[in-house]
Length: 304
Figure 1 (cartoon, one colour):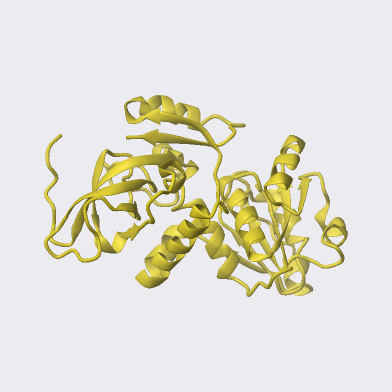
Figure 2 (figure 1 turned 135 degrees about the horizontal axis):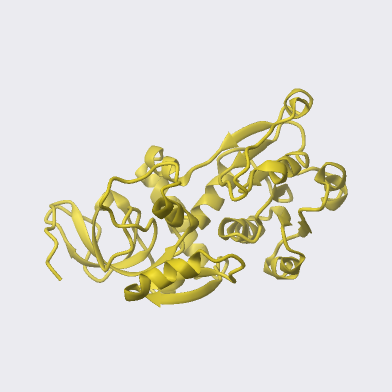
């Protein structure tokens, strides 16, 4: 392997593992909202170990485990500027750490950035068995929040309840009429939507007056149609969230604080992401095909 030329403020990171996320597949398909210039290396999260540091680098040293907050993690090595690195505590499972950057961070920011939530408050979400959905359940439980979760398949209900979900229903539930009873006489203060279409409207109908409805995905590939009544009579606030935009606009201190907090939750056993299968990087094409299949039991990862 040819040696990478190290800049003064850069760190050479040896990647240990990286997951294959839906956004990665969308980039490959050419359907993602923003596409990189070609040629490029895919991968928007992973975990690695510092190999060498540039002459001006402070705070990082060879042997440290790090999160590279940069695109291109499907590689054996990558050059990362120090402002796109977060140091991790030693002893973390590298496969779990490799999945810390995207889904847990998306869940954490959505639980904090749209409305002040207090212990006991309810959140409603669809796609509750997704990577973000599972992170929402686990983090909400740790924060004392309660979750009303919507899934497509009834066989997922028991698994999510065991994980810490308070209530799990299928898409057949009419949340406009059932949410109050399901949530003990109150209505959720935050809705998280990763599906769109009728599912997005269903969770919107569960909300209390003045609550935010946050869209972060579009798995159903259907637009969100907003009835006038939700705006006029309930003053529901429809927002969007994209983690990359947050990382671009947040301060470095806030970004690092978020990931250090999530790493602490991971170390404490609060966060855990199911793994479907791990492929060596040499079998990347097979791994992509596997990650493209529906009804998997967890993430597909590449091990470098």
